Image (cartoon, rainbow, N blue to C red; front, side, top):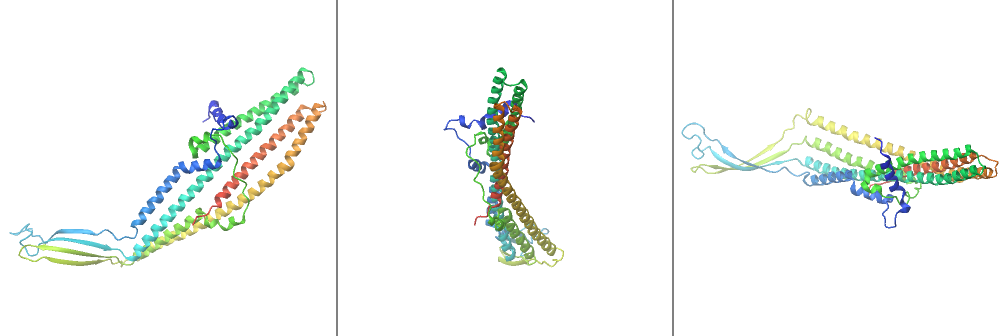
Length: 416
């Protein structure tokens, strides 16, 4: 759905009027945007809740089951003169006791290991979410920043074009310029206005995307520039396995291994003990009963063994998924490093070759036009060339900043 012109202009005013604001007005740096995103991100709150839940579950992991209270009446007659009497028949007894199931040590140890692995996994997933939010927020901030940089380049050229248009009008009135040249200047102004309207839309859209992460703070004017240029470092290749995206698979592996141990422990029997106090009728003495129960896992071929095999398959699956993620990170790292190097060379070439050449071409075209030996078309073409080169430089800077944002994400390590 298209936004109204009034809505678009409102966003442009908020993003381009930094110089007109007083010093007391707050402005938004990229670091402030990241901090705001971390504070307000519902995704982080959800991950924190998951971590807290895992920590609470760890407390009871590996504990014995709660004891059970046993109570009832044994051997109550239901026929004859003693029917429904609890104190006349010597076999009738009121029973109260306690029963405790004793889970074998292997199961309890495996449960503790699984709980610990789940806590580690939840903590690493929280860190992955935090890094993802930081990356996405910075990318959104950069999108606004570079859209405004394009607008400033275009705004500067439009001001120069306006002066040229006034000069052409004056020259036309003095019979020193043709009507065609005046129309060319006006046509160029209309073209620049169209491009500014497109940038108005781009800035408004970028602000909306930034608001996805920081809310209404996205309407604040930006201050400062992007993060400092990231220098390529070889250590990135050696620390990928320490990135939370990769390290989380170690926690998953520990959890899967605990599941294997738990399945294997099921082949060892659990047991239980019960102590009962039995009260008989007045003529008879009370009694005590102690009894034990023990599991008989004698059908392991169709019960425990399939479960063990399934858990081992899941353990292997985790290892394969880790390898896939590691390869993906390696590919992304190599791609972004190559992108950063290429873009840096292109920016350097723009600064040292393309921009000086286009400016010299414009200077010569203006000199020829003022001396009456050149055309306004050549002047406008050379100025348009400068605009295109400056716009290209902004595009290159944005692409390099985006690549370095990804590289910073890939360079993160799990903190000990």
